[in-house]
Image (tube, rainbow, N blue to C red; front, side):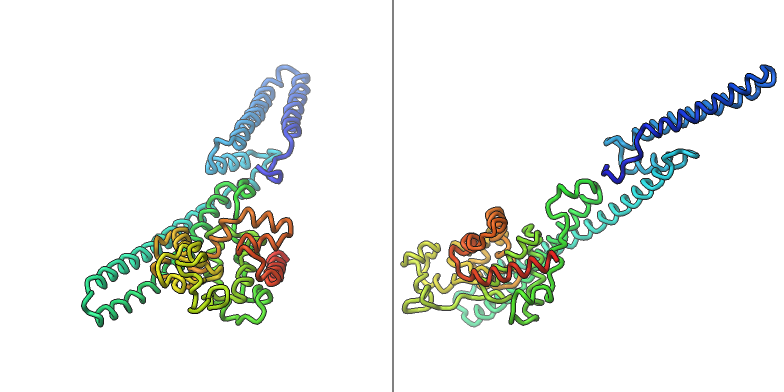
Length: 401
C-alpha cells in the first residue's frame, strides 16, 4: 500500500471508539445514580448500545486487519472496504469509501487489461501462423524447383513465384514483430493492473517514449530526409524497439542515431563498391580467398557480392548473415535470401537486436558521454561520429522535453 493509501493513524481511531464508550458509560452512571428502580430499563438500553459500539469496533478491527493482509484477494478487499464504509458514523467511513471506489476501478482496469492481453495474444498467434504458412509454401516451392532440372522455363516461373513468396514472408515477419510488441505491451499492462505497486520494479512499464516517435519529432534529427521515408519505415522501427526492449530515451536515441551515422537517412541501404571492398571486380576483397573474406565467413566464390553490407547496420559476410538470421529466429533465411536484410521490418529487427546485444556497454558509454565508444561498440571505428552525436542529442531532447 502506497503512502497516499494509508489510513489515519491507529491511535485516533481507538481513542475515538474508547471516547464514545467512556461517554456512554458516564451517561449510564448518571442515570443509575438518579434511582435504581427507574434506571433498570435505561440500564438495559444503554448496556445494549455499549455492546453494539464495542461489537462494531471489534468488527472493524477484524475487517481492517483483513484489508491489510497480503493474503486477502482483491475481490475480498473490495467487499471488506465496502463493509467498513457501511459502519454508521465510523471515523474511517470516508477513507474506506474512497478506497472501495479505487479498488473497484482497479478491478475494472485489470479486467480491461486482460481482455486486451487476450486479443493481443490472438493477434500475435494469427500473425505467427501466417509466417509459418509462408515458410511452408517456400519449402514446397523450393522442392518444385529442384524437381524441374531440365525445364528452364518452368524453373524461371517457379523462381519468380518463390521470390514473391519470399517478399510476402518478409512482410509477414515484420507484421508478426509488431504483433509480438503489442503482446508484450498488453502483458505488462496486465501486470501493472494486477499489482500497481510493482510499477517501479518492471522494466519498460510502458512504451511511452517509443510511442512519442513521429515523423515530426524525427525530422530534425534526419535533415534533408524525405518525410515519406520516415513515415514508411518508422512503424517497423518502433515495433523492433519494443520487441528488443530498447525503450529508454537514451537507447532509443542511440539506436536511431546509429541509423543516421550508418546510412545517412531513414532507409535500409546496400553497400556500394569502393576502395575498401573492391580491387578489380565489385566486392572481390570480400571473396573467400582473401583475408577479409575469410574473417567474414565467406566460403563460396561470389559470396563477396552476395553478402555485401545491407540494412541499417550494414551486416556483411556469410557468417554475419547467418548469425543475424539465427538471432531473429529466421533459421537460414537471410543466407538463402540476403536481399531481405534490406526489407524494412527485417532491417529494423537486425539493427535493434544488434544494439540490444550490446545494450549494457552502450548504456554505460552514453552515461559517461563517450559517444566515440558507442560508435566503436557498433562499428569498430569512428565513422559517422559527428552525425551520431547530432542525431542523438536532437532525439533525446525531443523525447524528454
